[in-house]
Length: 81
Image 1 (tube, one colour):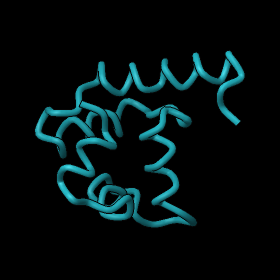
Image 2 (cartoon, one colour; image 1 turned 45 degrees about the vertical axis):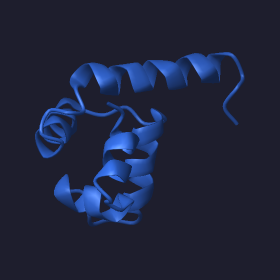
Image 3 (cartoon, rainbow, N blue to C red; image 1 turned 180 degrees about the horizontal axis):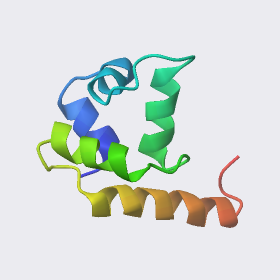
């Protein structure tokens, strides 16, 4: 399951997910989560593991990898502004 789909199903805001991941402080934690959801930003191993845990395993490491690959493919094809 995609991180965004899980977040919406669980009725959580970007900020709430940031707080669950321990990244709720800083300049714009909601934007950071949004970038992870779209694949725009790579996700390090620690955050990836936390995402799997907070989602109860519904968002897998493979899901996160697939999202990142889709974003990179679209960017290479010029489909991302």
